[in-house]
Length: 68
Image 1: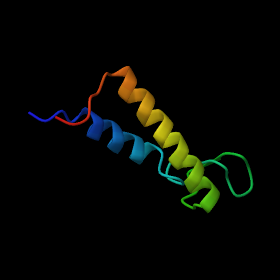
Image 2 (image 1 turned 60 degrees about the vertical axis):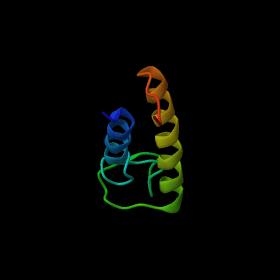
Image 3 (image 1 turned 45 degrees about the vertical axis):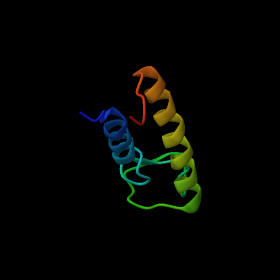
Image 4 (image 1 turned 180 degrees about the horizontal axis):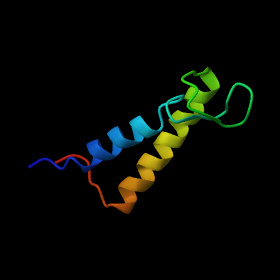
């Protein structure tokens, strides 16, 4: 059976960290805006960096091994 932990972690983080869905960092008018459903290039970059860091840390925390 294929280890799907990495996929589950990635999907959950993607949904939670989608810019504008729950929050947007940095916001248009404030540093953090909640549920505004808008994005900017800066917020996409910040959310991508946060996603990568959290994904890496969660893989280390749960001892997820990619590959076969």
